[in-house]
View 1 (cartoon, one colour):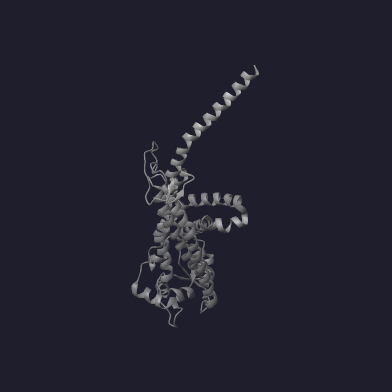
View 2: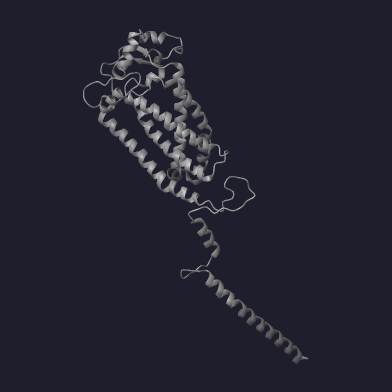
Length: 356
């Protein structure tokens, strides 16, 4: 009885040993073959799946296939341009934008130190001339408020990861980013409408006059040399800002609408391209706005009140827009400051350019 039990146990062990030897003999050639197949330039690939997808991503062209999804770009296995766009945005676009904006702020600061506030040489006259109507001022301030809001939210979305995360943390910045992105996306179309009205109300008087405008440029708007530089309704600085706002602003609007409404068959490559265009144009307009905002507020005496009230001081008009001033005086539009303050009528009926 005991001998039979031991015999059966030995028999089972021998069967297991034989099975193990057979399995080993079968698997060794397969393992060697797999290792040989995974060799690449003398290096054995331990994870062929990862190598496969890595090679796909590193191709210079997108691999297309077939998909039941009908969305644009659904047939592309891996969008290889996404990583290239991300690298360009993080490593080149954002750092270069930061440098450009910083240099513009430094330049404005140096200008302030060198020239100080540009004051009226003859002081205030006590007489006023209508320069901007109520319609023009409403259009200007509506566009200005939208522009500043979009500029601030855009700068937060561009630089927030580097500037705000160290202050508010990742979760805090995430909440800020959601709010700013929503404001940016919804106010963009409103800015487009406001820019159309702004263009219609201010295009007259902003036409280019080569001879006069070139003289203004060569003399730096009167900063170079002692001779006064004549200007009509708008000088070159004001015309420059108007056309930057129109052309660069138009580029921002078109690219922004493409990004805002991805429902017209835009591919990912299209969205990435217009994102770059949108960012570059926005940085250009932000930098240009520094000069306009500075000169229109604290840079030049008696300038801010012009867009605030619609009226300019006669001496201000004579010093900065002498040709326009002469037309206004000839038309009898110069009035006393007291009559302006007591006038309750809204100056909407006529525009200054109509009598220019």
